[in-house]
Image (tube, rainbow, N blue to C red):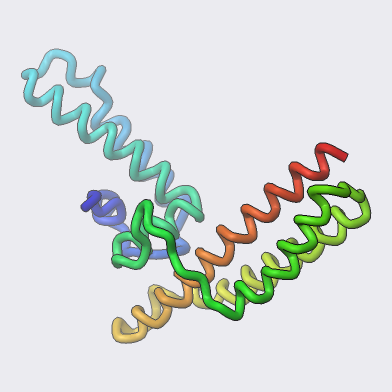
Length: 179
């Protein structure tokens, strides 16, 4: 299990943490743990400060990036497993079949208008997904604890759908670059 990055900074688990406070805490920990400030201390203390500095960097990189933060929180709650093929909802996969068919056609005939159409469809889907999950992300901390599992499941589904759409966006960008 990875360390609790939120506890490391004394922050509550949140999908929308106070980013200014996070940055201040990161810089404060950086000054506190930087190995150069501990060069004359015992080797054990130097090793511990290096470990703390590394933890600080890892924590900040994870918590300051919305996608990494979301994945981290989902993994923390056992809802994402590294290397495991996650199941997407069947209705979403059915919707994606049409897009995937359009992509297969674009692979053989890279039509700029077709590429733009698929890109617009994917952007619209991503925007709809983002708008739908925003209230859940913003209100997560205020939810009663017994509502967290349902909210986390919604967030997990959003995360998986978003990852799928990002892969399609990357394919579309590749086709656009070729045409």
